Amino acid sequence: METKIGSLDSCKPATCNDVGSLPSNGVVSTIQSSVVAFNSAEATLGRHLARRLVQIGVSDVFSVPGDFNLTLLDHLIAEPSLNLIGCCNELNAGYAADGYARARGVGACVVTFTVGGLSVLNAIAGAYSENLPVICIVGGPNSNDYGTNRVLHHTIGLPDFSQELRCFQTVTCFQAVVNNLEDAHELIDTAISTALKESKPVYISVSCNLPAIPHPTFSREPVPFSLSPKLSNKMGLEAAVEAAAEFLNKAVKPVMVGGPKLRVAKACNAFVQLADACGYALAVMPSAKGLVPEHHSHFIGTYWGAVSTAFCAEIVESADAYLFAGPIFNDYSSVGYSLLLKKEKAIIVQPDRVIIGNGPAFGCVLMKDFLIALGKRLKPNATAYENYHRIYVPDGHPLKSEPKEALRVNVLFQHIQKMLSAETAVIAETGDSWFNCQKLKLPQGCGYEFQMQYGSIGWSVGATLGYGQAVPNKRVIACIGDGSFQVTAQDVSTMLRCGQKSIIFLINNGGYTIEVEIHDGPYNVIKNWNYTALVDAIHNGEGNCWTTKVRCEEELIEAIETATGAKKECLCFIEVIVHKDDTSKELLEWGSRVSAANSRPPNPQ
Image (cartoon, rainbow, N blue to C red):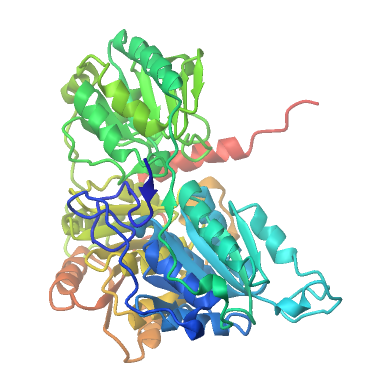
């Protein structure tokens, strides 16, 4: 069996029938042949690269021009099915490709040599940590300069051009330096196919003098990729399923918890099928929010140790067996290593490996195959969910605001909850929005993204740009803190150029609140900006943009009504002014535990 790239089995519900996404009927889409016939003048590296991007599902490329990539950009622009989006800086271009890959299954950005490459590097590292296939293309030096003793601009002043390459080697799964047309076709195709197979970023450097030169290897329309799928070891799969079924079937109140690697394993549907078959209580880790439908009949919320959603941790941690599918247990997701879990009670299912308690481990077993097969062997057991149902008390509501009372954050998110639907997606910035957005109940089809493993503040501005461009039929609701916004604010400009209609809630509390709760100091206080005036200046009368400040619930209600009504075709920027100490109780708890983990003294020598 072979998998044609032209349909990436994404965990998120498909929202379009573009190449690279799963069609709404679940049938694998096929590559449409180019309507432009190749001739010798078009048989170029630049044209080939552009067609490859279109074939795998990329219709938007995020770029920053520089003298080494200008000819390549000409060829990307010449591809009718490709839209080149100029960003304000390379970091945001990388973040945009990250957000795009979350929605489409793959993203791409183009920057220039070293000054651009090292600027985008942080975003590529974040995509690597989140298992996102991002094609990072760099315009490189003239091919004649390799192997010489020349010193080039945009370098650190040494005749060694490998500095950028060495930096990318640790945050990409494949690196292609294309400085010869003879092997350019092979290098480009290997890089792109490796990104898709490994679900990690790749680096492609293209010498600036090569994109426009015809070459016989590019004289044919590129044949669609046909990638052999990974297969489970059949005997290992059977043994793993038998051991897991025996382990779980003797448990009294087992539970199952979804983790972020469900996405890279393409096992979201298999996880839900298992939940349907066994009847276990179903939770997600915080970084897996949005990968599992929250309207599932046995869904009990987010498991995040001491800061879990109400009554979820009690059920998970009191279970006598738990199946974790695709977890990442780091200091943040474990709340400073304070989870009350026991290894001997756990089955850990990684994308290609199963570990059962303190006992056996099974390699070469794919998560998707394992979950589907296990569902056929488990006895239904709804005990844990029934216990949850017994102790569950519906969420309370924030205290009613007095007229013109200063707006509280919990009131803000009560109103954001009412905005959510299948036509929306939530982007949560690193900070207190992590915790407030975790408590949102996602309707069926509502998208949700945040960057928990890497946690780079400012990520959300570029990610909102990329996600909104990838899924234009959804309206993105971005919740961004003021400190994070100051890092990457410029690319609101690019959202306006692209005609996006996102709603940005800028939460202005005067500083880096998440860091205040870990370790306070004067460095966590930032200079206050007039954020609406800044966005108005960026708007400058070009494009559709509406801004407002809100200080109380009455103004918030009016702003939301305007943003979803009269200004629904505009980019809406709502600055929400709240008290500097107005944080979620979850952040207070999480911050103290992470602080304790960070401040552990050295072990005795």
